[in-house]
Image 1 (tube, rainbow, N blue to C red):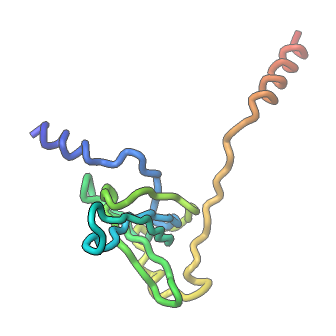
Image 2: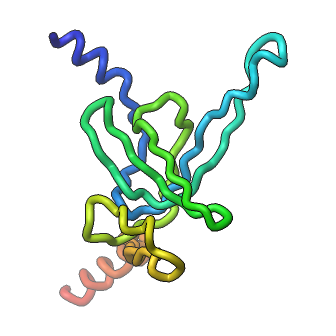
Image 3: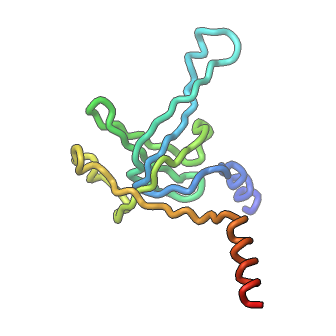
Length: 143
């Protein structure tokens, strides 16, 4: 049984960003161009699909997420297996703040009602030189 678990876990993609429902993602998918036309290897191209994550479900290898966008006035949804070999990369464009696990209400929302509030991300990086000089000044003052 342990060997089966190890085999399944070896198929997991490890370089995936952390994202949640409400985030705006750009998913780069490998598309195989008709391999019958050209002799040899099939031509593979990358196609980006950018939209809002409206659902995230499953466990292990069966995890899936659904991304929705509106293209030329028509809503388009695509459901991807998280660990699919067809997914080249996933980029988090914007982090959204929502209070629901499933955002199906966005299907009926139009215009401004379909917007999701962005989450403000604070920068936690500190300039190392300024912190070193501040510590040095504090040491001089206490002496």
